[in-house]
Length: 609
Image (tube, rainbow, N blue to C red; front, side, top):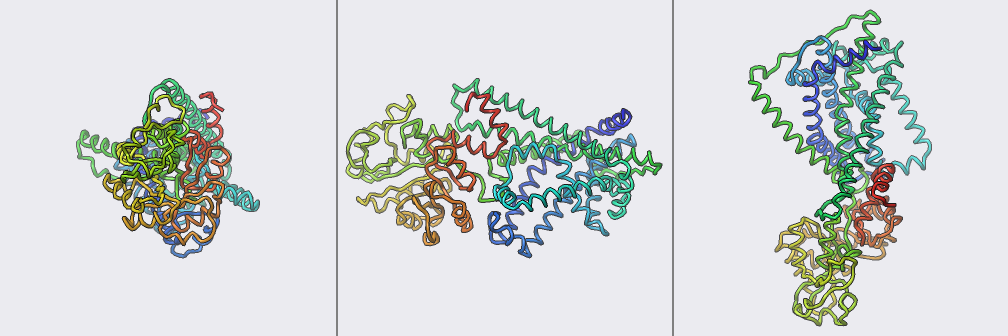
C-alpha cells in the first residue's frame, strides 16, 4: 500500500506545474465561457419548445418536442466531449509522469483535443453517455456539499415526494450507474493510453476490474471523503472569518453590501475551486490503479506517444505573458459567473424566470420615514434589489413621492396633495421610522429619487397614484422624466389604475409596466399593457405564477414581512417580494437556497434566532 501511495505522489508531483496550469486555465475558461454558453444553449432549447422555464407541467411537452430532443442530445454530446478533453489531459499528464518525462501545456492540449475527437469515430459514441455518468459519480463529495448550498428545483422535489416510484427509479438508476462505473472504470485508460475502441476498452476494463472492484471503489470513496471534508472545513472557517469581520465593522456603513450574498459568493467560489481538481485527481487514482493492476496481472503497460509542441520555439518570457493574459481574462470571466451564480442571475434552478428580487416597500420603511430619501438610501445599504415608491402630482404639476393623497398621516397636516404647491409641500417634515438620523426628512421629488438611482444603480418600481384632480397626464410626465435621466431599463411603472399603464405605454411602448391588484382571478390576458402583475401575497398561488410566467410576465408579491409568507412566495417562484424589512426577507431567501447547517451556523455566530 505504501508503494502505491508513493507512486500516486510521484505521478502527481512530476508534472504538477503543467497539471495545475492546465486545470486552472481549463476550469476558469469553463466557468467564464463554457458554463454561460451552456446556459444560453439550454435557454435556446426551451425557446424552441415555446417556453422560458421548466416545471412539472411542461416537462413532458418539452421532452416530446423533436427539435428540442435533437438539440438536447447534441448539447449533451458536446458537454461529454468537453469533459473528455479534461479527462484525456489528466491521463496524458499522469502517463508522462509515469515515464518520468516532462510535458507542456501545448502538448497536453493537442493530445486531449485529438483524443476527445475520437468519440465521433468508429463506434465510440457510447463513451459520451458513460462520460456523462462518470463525471457526476466522481463529483459525489463536492456535489453533496454543493447541494447543501443550492437546492434542487422545488417541482422536482414535490414530484418525487408525490410519486414514490420515481424515487425508487432514481435510486435504482444510481445503483445501476455505480455498477457500470465500477466495471468500466478503466475503460478511459484503455481508450486514451492504448487508443482502443470503446467496445474493446469496456471489455478489457471488466477483466481488469473483476478481481479488484473494492480496491477501486475504496480508493475513490476515500478521495471523495477528502474532498467533502476539505469543502466543509474551508467553508466553515471562511464563513466564520466573514462573520467576525462583519461583527468587527458593523458600525461602518457599507453601501450596497449584502451580508448573506457575501457568504453565498464565498461558498460558490470554494465549491467551484475544489471541483476544478476533482476529476483530474480522481483519474490520478484510477490511472495509477490501472498501471498497478496491469503489472499485477502480467499485462504489458503501453504508454502514449506525446505530440510535438507547436510553440516550442517561442521564448519562455512570451509564453509566460500569454499564459498570464489567458489566466487574467479567465479569472475576470469566471468571477462574473461566480457572482451571477451566487446572486441568482445564473440560476441553477430552471423552474421559473430566475432569481427572486427583494423590493423595499416605500424604501426601508421599517427603519426610516416611508418614501423619503433616508428610506431609499437605507434600502440600498440593506441590499435591496429594487425600491417601490409612490408618485403624486401637486397643484403646480410637480411629481412628488408620497403614498396617501392626503399628507396628514405622514406630516400631521390635514391637506390633500392636489391642493398644495410644491413650495408648500417642501416645508413639511415626514414623521415615522425608527432611525434617529431620519429627523427632518422632507417629501422628495421624483427627480431626487431618479438622480439617486442613476448613481447607485438600484432599480425603481414607481407606482402612479392618480387622484383625478388635473393629473391625467401624470403617466406621460413620469415616462418623460424617466427618459430624461436615461433610466428606462432601470424602472418599472406600476399602478392600480390600468388606464395609467396604457397611457405610459402610449408614451413609450418599451417601458415596463405592472398592474397592481389585490386579487388575481380570471383571464389576465385582457391586460396587454401590463408586463407584470403586482398581487397581494395571499392571492398568489403556484398555478397563477406558472400561468403568468408562461405568458412571459412576472409576479410581484406584496407586502411580505413574515417568514411563513416569504417561504410560500419563494416556493411559488415569484419574481419579486415587496417587503418593509429587506434584511429579514434576504435572510429567508438565503435560507431557502442554502443548507440549514450553514443558516444555523451563521445565526449562531451572529447571536440571532
